[in-house]
Image (cartoon, rainbow, N blue to C red; front, side, top):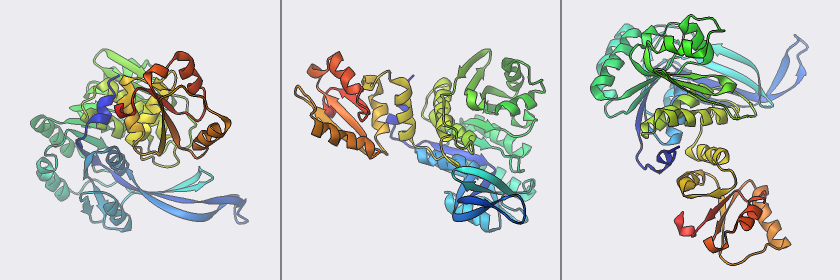
Length: 399
């Protein structure tokens, strides 16, 4: 896989996110007793966190990866809307009479115990729709990808989407859709449609026992490519008669909130960095697996993705030339200690204890080993040390 292109490019791709913006609220505390008023837990609140949800979560992830993001959506004239406006770059449309969707998740010991939703489905105001359609060419100037995050709240109208498709041909950008509902005809002309498994079957009107390739064949009537997320089973990519399945790595699933948003963001970012569809899908699969290990919506970095790629692609801990760019990215946002071994070496008890302390502190130890010392026996022994994360054979300046 030519993953290095994801990490070595210094330019920031410009990506637009169009869709439904939500405010995610996390009320976090301890539930230690049952209420005397009803058989429900009493949550003793310790703190409250607010994050951009829905299309906003896609924006936050893209910014974390290193993209310049154009946010296209709406909020209500309310506190939740103003909170979202302060979190995101750009300016979202404000629709009078529309309540900004808000989801409040009550969390105890990293587990959701209840979710309270404040939302109404309201079509985009006609005057706002017409204004946005007129402004789209300016908003989408120089973008390489438009990610459509449709949460079914009424913003992504048929007229708006079809204008988006016509502009994609004029301005030469790709349209990647995370759809909602059972009618995908509104997304006709998209480059990629990315439904989850349930949405894919519902939109195809096929029974749940039907082969997945038959489902994809139905959906390919609306888009050039179909990417189906299959939860714990990974991803499946369909393009014409070709299909590729990406199995999910085994994870400790803490929370699936926002995993689809993360997959969409990484997939779009990889395509914007000129990776192939297959490479983008593979990276999105890695990101989706990482996101479920977080509580709440995950905000992944290139460093986290790079570290996971190294874990999955290295038979041992020795970094070869093909992985050096990935290693550089893996070291960007994590403290790492480096040791250069130039002479024939042994590690005494005092040195061993000092080095192992690096691992106990949650830091990574990178060993540079001179080529003349890199015998198989030495590399095998160094790889066996739990506190050694990576080994690079060659001069330190090579990194």
